Image (cartoon, rainbow over the protein chains, first blue to last red):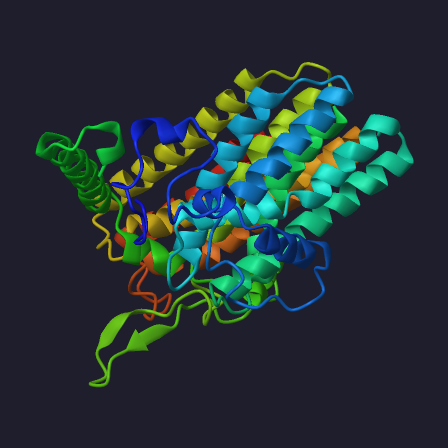
Length: 193
Length: 250
């Protein structure tokens, strides 16, 4: 659980309550595994779906960025009057499990579920922007419909690009994009209705 | 490990190890049982599809009239023996499970969408749609297998092939449902329904020929009663598609 370099015997029970900390203690963010540089790189990779994604981008499957995005999505929905945190959790879980199953069956080498959750969570960013937009402008009319369709397409395009490059799949990009698109469409349904 | 809390006891470390072992054993148990029920390599063969395969197959389901060779390509080993069939990526006539599975999921979501459009959406309806599809699938599977047994047909294909063939009609159901959702009139949606039912019936007629009539190389000169019964069975399968579609289209 803990990496080498910890010195448990140098501190006492009460040092946890002070601000001194232990000797050789790594900074909190590094211990929690939150790496802002990685979050920024991956978010930029999502925002520019036309750039080729290197296949080492998901070597560390961190869930901190996706958790942040999902929380932001829930907060924006709450600000526009829809408190759907339970639905977000349920749909997200169901979608991650089914995409995990499909990807394991379709690719040559398998994938583990934390990496699928990580990719799907990062590519939720355009949907978060849509929900932020829906706080100020209701999405009922034609413009809202166009924006919703564009964000679903953007999300599925970038996540299918990431999946195909990380899993080294050949000629299967649209086949990955379709179930992922259904997943993001259910999030969009929550935003619009 | 937790020496700073004063729990520097072997018992704590033993407890941690025990918990870790228990979790690892639990995962191994689940994986073993999962692999007993679900044959992963066989399933992988059915999901080994490419973009062009899916596009061409969908076009084939909706317009099968002009397609010419319907036989599946055989994968031979070095000694020339038959090792199995080629995967869907290399053979347009091979059945796959990607299209049926996603068609069923899309159908369930479309049921929910149609219910929402009528203003009566409830998550119960999604469960009803899901269980209906599963029930129809099981019914078709069991009746096809039993009829093959009664008609004495040597059944060399696998059950997953039958699942795939049962699932292809959901593509037609989706097309009809989308036309209905977009607000077409009664005549147009009935025409689309009848056309797609006929096309999937023809598609299944040609595709399942190798399952039901294994000695298809022999010409029509061998019209014995057994062969006639098998041909009727094949035609019944194709015709029942329209009946099933009628019940599943909302």
